[in-house]
Image (cartoon, rainbow over all chains, first blue to last red; front, top):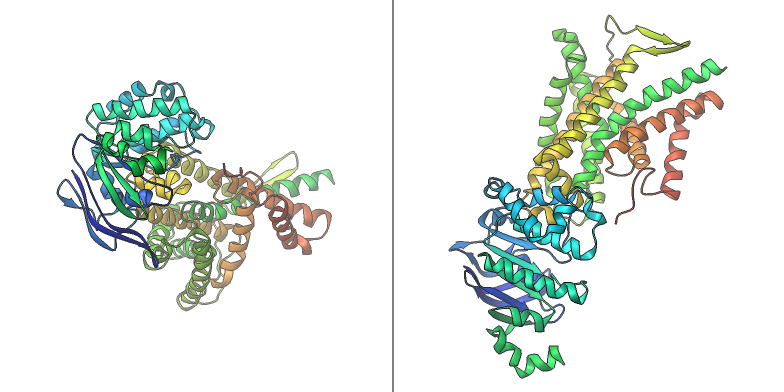
Length: 233
Length: 293
């Protein structure tokens, strides 16, 4: 479904990604794990078109994304939940969700999508006319995910969805991601919570200093000695 | 004494409504794009000339020329965005503000000279048959032209607010103003949003230009003075705060007229600038602006 091939990315002079290649197949949950500053967010920004690769190829369902603009990429069916949600705090919960369905393809099925999001997150239905800025951390993250689902994505990319959440909420969050996946949405997950994301993911890539240094089934990577010692203590 | 104080207050409010309308477009543009368009006063001027020529050549009533002036200025705004301002979109916010300030300053000189060439330096104004009509309530005079400015300013504030809150496009504009990156992840084409916000802001300057023409007069060099007023009002109301622009305008208008009443009309302009400094020092987010959460 999604293929990155030998992608190099620079921030001015500084190279952030070195020949990153990865694949996400339809229906999978793929985790991209690694330490802070490894290039995980950069990889997502390349896919969603917020950043442009210097060389390499990014393909989604057979189409190159290299020259596509961010709004076009959303139209194709890729939706990103950015780090820490980035909800529109000055707007109501409902307005946030409506904006999620901004692209033509999603606007046609807005009512059904809204129904689905409310079923998944009943809390958002209760607070639909509330200002998004008044929500708690967990609710904000729900809203960010709900908003991304409103675009009826084929591929959902999540950037640190568990960041800043209380442990009990983190568990809920991972269950939620599994449920979204069961409904037929392919998932690319970026996480620092290595244990939980490797348990959840079908496959995973390990990113360090802008390079892929390991890949395999989630459970396999979990048993790697280097992963164990580096992330799980 | 009480009566003339009341008259002064009313006059201040009516003038302030016009200040608010001038600032409305500037505030919309700044709030969404973070362009500091100091050529806003020149846009007001062109709106004024559109009304003036429509009146003198075609006999169109100034208030009926509102759509004409808006349309012309919308197109001019879109052109200016496309030719000039779109090049600064990718800059980080702080250098965007500085760069657009310089660009717009250059632009204001160019626009002013174009107007000088095309329309000569003559001061122009419009006097309609009903221009001197006024109502008197409790001994306080309400000149109809000034009252019309208030009505027009309120109508356009309401229209703009409805547009921003009730339509999909309006919501996309507000989302882009809050966080352009998140907005583009929603599939919003932020270049289109910027273009639209800029052109709408220019169209609002066009409306303001008409009211300036019927209440004062116009000439090619008038722009800077109105830009100054709009900047003061925008800071008073909070940067990018749409209802704050009208409230800020009213406050500036009343402050000016109170100054000329209690102190001297020589200090009218000074009062606005002092207010501007005080707000910047003690409440930089504006009188009605909330701190970013």
